[in-house]
Length: 309
Image (tube, rainbow, N blue to C red; front, side, top):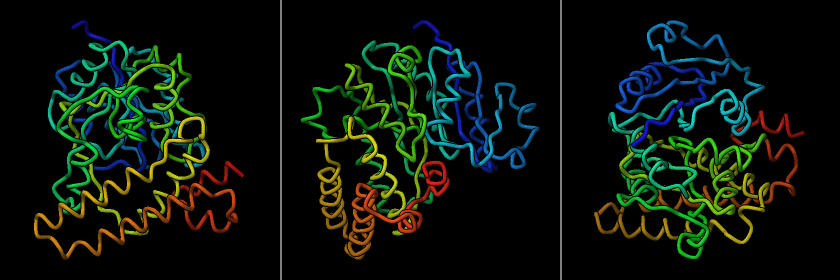
């Protein structure tokens, strides 16, 4: 396979020891990385020695007010002349030295694929039920999703995660890139635009990162509120392809899994988590009917609403 010029782009905020470990693992990848471009929010939190310790690192500093889920990644893409753009979050950890090669290979081997995202494995501290959710959303089998798969996958046809995902830069420019202003979900919005233009999203199970969260019910509520807002703001992608069906399927599968494994005591928690997710999503989809005060109490991204005002 021809070696394609590849840049890794990471938005960061208050990066610490985990971030340093990420830089170390990226620097040790078998597939050559041209540079690691870090879009760092607030210069005072940046450790300047990282640029000496990891020569691939190049940093751009932003203020908290300047950061935007879509706009910051869009700005980073404009700073790169690489053929492949790999976006990651600062809390994703490559499972091995094959990560970048597996993602780039998936794009190189399938010209229809404009994006390829990695499998997310649970971290050591991941709770029992969240481990199952990881396996539900990131199975062992790779696949390529195109517009013809909407009847099969529904909303998941457009699923792509910037926790770790690679993009063909040529196709990215053709589509127009990430939305300039996004509260959340910029990866899925872009993937939706791309799929509707005839391209595909590759899920690459061989490309693996460790990434998981033990969210509380309130954190799930806030996260899903912003998810609902992102879908309401982009009806050109999400209208007519509801998320509720996939959510119900996850609840049913999780319930069956808890019963099968004898973890009946976790069932009340499953219902509380699911209710929190749905309540947040329901309100987010209808955010235009809410007061500004109500919106600010529901969102996890208050800075977005200051700009949006």
